[in-house]
Amino acid sequence: MKKRTEFPTNIILLSAGIIFILLTLTMLISNTVIIFLLEHGIMDRPPHPDSLLPFLIQTGIISILIGTILTLCIGHFPLRPIYTLIQAIHSVSEGNFQTKIYLEHPKEFRELSRCFNQMTEELAGIEMLRSDFINNFSHEFKTPMVSILGFAKLLKKGNLTAEEQAEYLDIIIEESKRLTSLSSNILNLSKVESMSLLTDSADFNVGEQIRECVVLLEKKWTKKNITFDFHLLEQKMNGNEQLLKQAWTNLIDNAIKFSPANSVIVLSMSKHSGCFTITITDYGFGMDEKTQHYIFDKFYQGDSSHSSEGNGLGLSLVKKIIELHQGTITVKSKPLQGSSFTITFPAEAASASVK
Image (tube, rainbow, N blue to C red; front, top):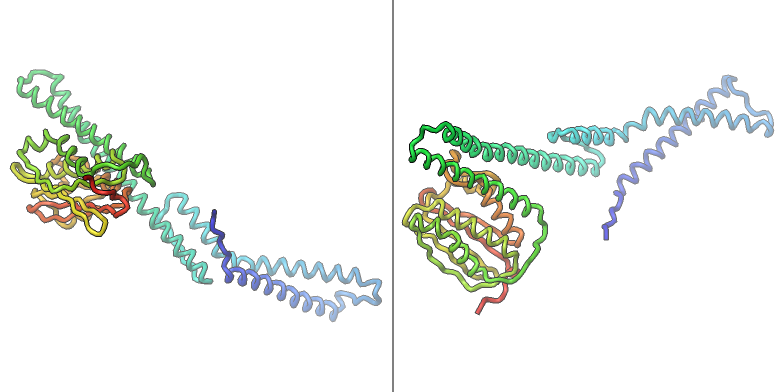
């Protein structure tokens, strides 16, 4: 049921006041003009009641003319804020999100100005994000395409050793994987961002799910001789199993990617006040404060050279998935000391522990 919006009393009083003033001025000026015309013989006084109708018609015409002139002269003043708002709306519709209005009186117009300016600021922010998204996506998409095209041309020319051919083919394969990962992450992120409510929720063992994600990434962590230190609970939770599996996979993959060889990644879980927390800690390169501030933004990469594998969408996707489950994700990190991602879910998401 829609909430009924009450029309502000001040606006009603202002409108009534303007109408009253116009009527009063019309009456006073009309009477003054009629008296003037009668005194100077321009209008004849009615000699008897039978001639009163023409006199009333004359005075009525004078009153209408004066009222129309007053309305045209004075009526635009109370409508000026409306004209200002209309012009501002036209400006915004043309893409100028820097438009601002400053209406002072009455206080309802001040509130209107505040809301309008807040809206344009939000739109400007959205437009900036959209522009950045397009620019970053174009860069991330173009870079591997140029690489694939360049090495494909070299292979076509021939005159390459077997080692060179194998090296160029490996590069083409890796860049193709990068494109596949980019398109997959964008599709997943687009799908998740369009969701306002969770679908396909079910109870499952989140501790076991995290272990499964580690197994799925076995090829990557065995290549760097990384070991895992598990401190997981047999904890059930209610949520979208596939989405959360994507989140754990991205976080663990991220930890593997930035961990040095022969290091340890710690996966832990704890419960407190009904909530439960999952922490993923690595002892890799770490991040500075600026990187931590922007790490969950789309396409943001602490490594601006793009020399590391990734496209800056994984953690943005993780954050959205966690928030859909009413959870929060934070990061603590120090350069050259590693990073720790902490995910906290409310009591509502937790089910009874698995026995």
